[in-house]
Length: 209
Image 1: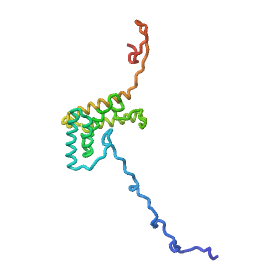
Image 2: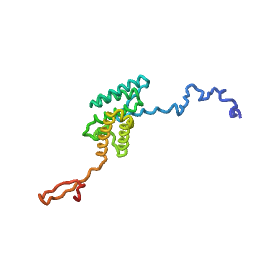
Image 3: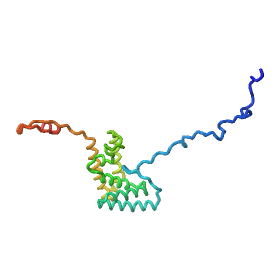
């Protein structure tokens, strides 16, 4: 029957186009093209910084700033120490001393009455702070310890004794804060005094004395 036969002409002869050849067709991106850039990692605990290309002049300027930072650290001027160290870290991102000096200043500047501040953590009552689990707190503490020690081998510590001493002091503050947050508070018990006939409360570590 006419009109029901099979057409042997190619699709192009009917005016059709290959959809992949259309200028409106967008080819799928390759894995390499579609991958988003990874976020930059912080250069030191508590102070994510943007870095600049490093050259001989930048390294020389970073060394000068680190010398200033170490001088300010010896004098106890911690804010100036942190400012110079952060600037040096931007100019010389691979400097082994800049992160140590900056993190040390951050810890020593923290509120000594706050364990969270000493660990460079937000306060628990901060509405923007997320709950911190024990495993996360442990990882953060290890990262902080690494930041205070990573650039201080024996030779560097001997060459820069003021930095080594300040880093050890900061490490002591952080360790005390971590232990205070992770050590269970001992319970108490009440006992009557045979002499005064009054009740007294003691920590349970004194049971048996």
